[in-house]
Length: 399
Image (cartoon, rainbow, N blue to C red; front, side, top):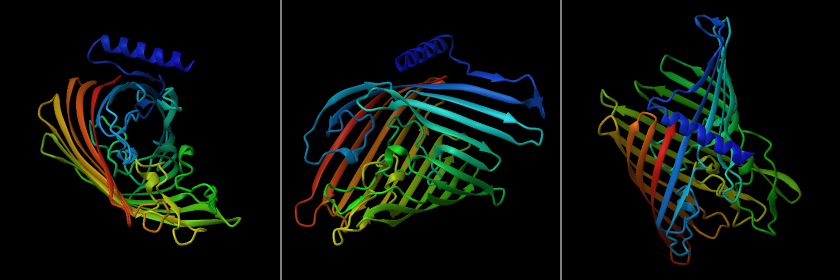
């Protein structure tokens, strides 16, 4: 059944693309109207992504994203090619309007990145309802920002220091002034990331479900165009020890800048810096890798949360209406001195650039070069590091 759905998606997408450059979205509008607009509107969208990868150095072959923290510093180079369509997406949006001027907006979006062993099973990315100032469901975390994505980056789990993750949540958004906005949110982890701290076998610490959601508050100043945003987070990370429930306090702050320069908006600059303790699960690339914390080196019945500082900067330039380039640099650094992971610190570096060509407004082809390096620092032993490099190539087609 899943294979038939995927085949149908490819066939329909091909038919739409070959019918002309200006592909039409599949949409519906009710005949009944409220305040001059349809009472109900719905639209089905899709995005095909041909994900081509050639690994030059490092041992990240088999990973569809350039997660440099997965580069084994004790391993050997594994050059190789990889091609898939697993990041192909389907989105359904619906809007219902009411006589008082308010409306309900809902979104369901998924891709084929789910399942082990590259089975390309369907996975929910977004599923939420938004009414007035409230949002309920799963979407991009309030600790990051949906618009803080380096435009036209092929590596969709890209910058190793970027805070961006999808979370089930309840969120309130309010306007303090015409330009200043605030958000308050309660968020929980995705089921696939329930155990984000590292507990070895036969440890006196064991996993326990968390009893409190994460609390996030933000301030966002809107520019014309772009924005500046600061977000703060508090987390209570639960664990078991000595047959009792315990928790460790995690916290962090994220500062974001998204700026468009020039009257024609041909230059886009993005910057993000993150600082905190026990917040790794919110990093797009590193989340779910067990780096929120580990057993305390000096007290085996205590969970020690890892301090981290991280960030990225990117610059996109449009050379013409169709040709554009992107340059990006990113890093994250973990302090493991108080934990039992065996190293004093971990540094992951990430940099790259690409060139893209918009054949038509809905169809983009391009190539991208990425470089990274993972370094582990030890108290006694010599440091270990291993670089990696990769070429991404492919196309994006929106319909």
